[in-house]
Length: 428
Image (cartoon, rainbow, N blue to C red):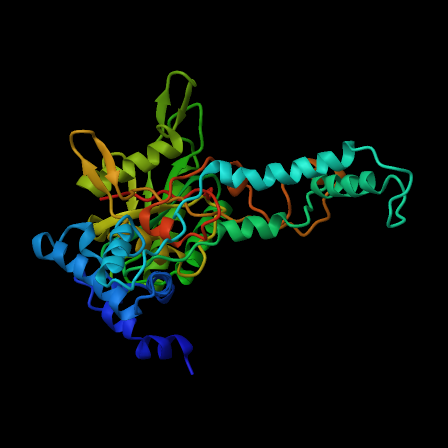
């Protein structure tokens, strides 16, 4: 028996939330719908109200907004369950009957001092154990320096990159549920790179093919954003051969995987330009310049920045989201769909304020986690002392905190801030 299907078929709350005026609830994945149901369950348990009545209150508040402005983000029931409207839902439930009491839910965000306090306590206890004078032998009969040995063992674990509970702690804080609705616009996966040799081109195309096989979706497209290597002159003898080889490889992918649905793979290549400061011929602003040129192409169809385009780019006019990957970054199975689905959620869609000239609600950039592959070779003592802990990706340890969106904020295991790595998404 599929337990998830059984629960949703038999749940009264599920059928009630399925009447979401925005029509978004039924498009979300199971984990996100389950998060909504758990919020209803918590409010009901702490207010002593029936769960169907809690769901009815949230839907009534949602319907009142939908009747006046269907495009308002508050017209989605999630606003009154996992976003700022949950306070209003709790108040309405408490006022529905005299026997109900106000429900108090944990805060959606934990402040930095609360996050740092347990770490400071552990450090203080360890330091006190080291500095406190002790008798020759303890009551339990242990030798005098047992605290020194325990503290030294703990420090050794950290210095060798093997903290006893660091992996588990970081993994728990990094858990995040997937907020998902089906993508309504075509996403594009791009890999900025350089054309250096035929073997390197083959590796780039193979990587693009692997990402496609792991993320097969009718709306998903893939492209290589390429430049030539820096040179002392505008063109080199082998440039045309490399560019022709790259174009043939892209055409081969289109012939293999998209003969009937139109091109799914593209090559966008720029020519060298003279850089007076570097005294070299190179791609304008390198990686950032390639992404800016791609943005102009997607927004207005300006192809002037690219000297060679392989593939019919007419479908790119519908692209709204761009996922940028490094050449050595993999795209796990169905990850592209989840990225786009998260941003397509009504509570995460960006709203641009023309007067303030910035996004005031929602998000146009998503920075999900980037993991690292563990090497198979035995590392040296120097690497163990100064390298990152095995099993913990460096992005969660070195990148500054990123503010979480309403949906992500409501779905995070409420244990501190998350730090995220490198995928850029363009808002339409």
